[in-house]
Length: 275
Image 1 (cartoon, rainbow, N blue to C red):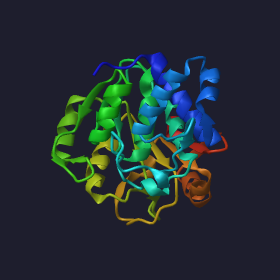
Image 2: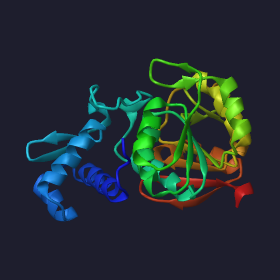
Image 3: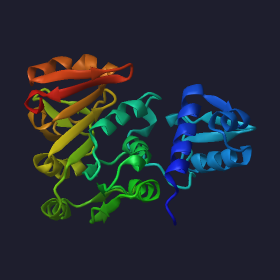
């Protein structure tokens, strides 16, 4: 399948953002805002509905909340914590775009929220993307011009590939510029933790070798505190939602993290050794 043009991708992302912010919008309104025909908008809405970004309605579209995501979309969404995500968390994850440079080699963790980040990489040039989620890899091939590598190994029931030995080979062949990981919490030993134990070993390897690790914590999650993927001192950037900030601010401060940016969606901390 030929990759869509940057203008087309940008328009579709703009539509998804407009629908998300307004909750519901009509075809005529979108056509006027984006200066294209109603036929073009309807084609865009059909595509975005297939991808799980919205739901078509009579004469327009409505925002598809995470709880309402359809099971029969063209590209199935990974179910990792999907039902818990709020409408603001995409904006939180998009903060990581500020750290991604043309020519980077990115390793992205699994998860439906990371999947939502991928289309926004369309404007980055000469990327290499390393993924262990087949759904995310398919989306990356469609939305970006990046070289896409899928970590080989065993395929789980939710389209995630798992094999720590293959990960070691990948890390020996590619210098990882940035590792973007969706985390579930910070334990009392100042370690980043995830719910999925099967990925913990792989992610520990990546954090040790990546030039920069960006950890995103969108929510407070109950999980096994032994599923550590690395100490806070090994993390470079943390992006936290405001509810999460309340719980972890003191730990981050004690581990020499400094607040460098904030907005209505969340707060960004940087490890002092990166300053």
